[in-house]
Length: 391
Image (tube, rainbow, N blue to C red; front, side, top):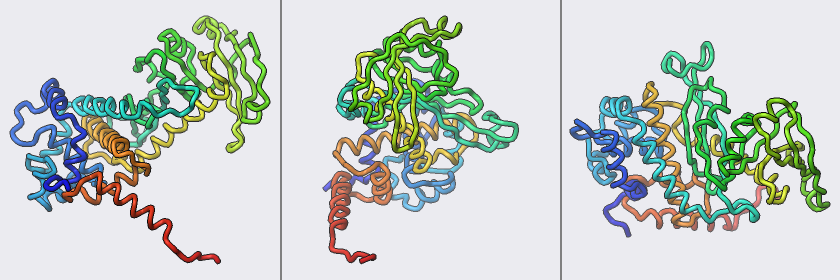
């Protein structure tokens, strides 16, 4: 039994306290702070993410309802709505961004042995963006259209564990392809893009960096087929249609991307769609490349998950700093749940883990015992003798 420590404080053990203090000192986060530190701010907003609090007043009411337990949660300062609002407005959001990246490195090490496809052992990333709508009157800096505001989350996720590796927040009016200029590419890694990121200059920069890309084609791309490799009948039955080596023939394409590249076309029976993709990787089977691009859908599921289960659509502050702080703390909570799932070798989804933990945050019980017993009880109930409704 883990007597004396709450479930919430055990979750926060994933945070390396010394590294966090170094980050806080670097950005002077606790300068002239009397009692409500950056750690208190993080813990309060993490509590809000786990328990789906809607406002600062809601956070204050919930935490003030049990003041004798705040110490056991790790919160040392007095939780007040005005104090938390000032902290969100004034404290540098990069403090929580760097903390999230520290947690991401921990999660990446835990998920390093997970592989999507046997033929592809390298690190693979999917890059895309999602738009979050905002009220233009409350967020005038996030102008999107004439009467609408919004921001974009340009996100790079590691497909081993679906862990976000890079997030950049920009106004929603910015084109997606410009976000590629903010990335630094890892040699030997795979980067998977949708057709919105098809750009000759930027794809060639990825090629020169030693990384590999897989991108869906655009319409009206002019190219010349240099070589066409035969398709195995078994691969054809799996959806593969063609595997070619091509060269761009348009003036812009030939000038900005002078190298040869690979063109693969495959058919997906479930959606009744044919996809054409380009890549600079030649030594991997074409069917594996097509399956790898199909795994790009994981980032769409990631966006859907965080919008449904994290508090990133209703914000606790109106400044860019407050919005960025809330988003990065939400991502930190997501990564903490992923770390807990891997360390305890749990098979159920992150949503169930987060819901179980949110119901027991104030309880003094071992977190591993809590999760494993809940799963076993769930499994036993699924196999109980139950009458069928339609017999």
